[in-house]
Length: 179
Image (cartoon, rainbow, N blue to C red; front, side):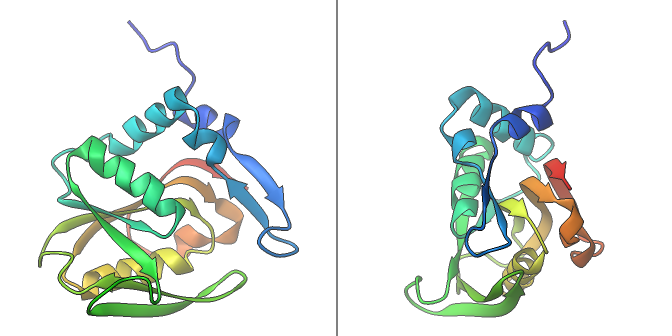
């Protein structure tokens, strides 16, 4: 019997809230909180993100902060560990850092040295792909600590901002592309 439920892109679209002028004027923030608090919709999203990934990855890495929500939940579904990619100064011990440009500034992210066993297959995830600066920096950072990054998966992609292009030939999957 065919699945009568709406496609997952429609589920995501129905649970994303636009917040104008956040975190600064001119930026339209995609708030996924309505998705995170809707158990059936959130389950559909996690199932879609996990599709084809079982047995393909050893770890899931998520970018602070909403990438932690997506990544940790997805790691649980896949039965893998989770690696946090954090803002500078938030991780104890030795870290490897990368600084990159955002659509509205600059940021530095870090991963703990030793958090990723050499050669581990890592799936990088985040909530939204915008300009791609964070994704490229996180991907490169994970490779620097020994990961073999297998792809970058997001819930929402802001197509007009060109993030996918910035990632080049790296595999990208998004559940919903807007703009």
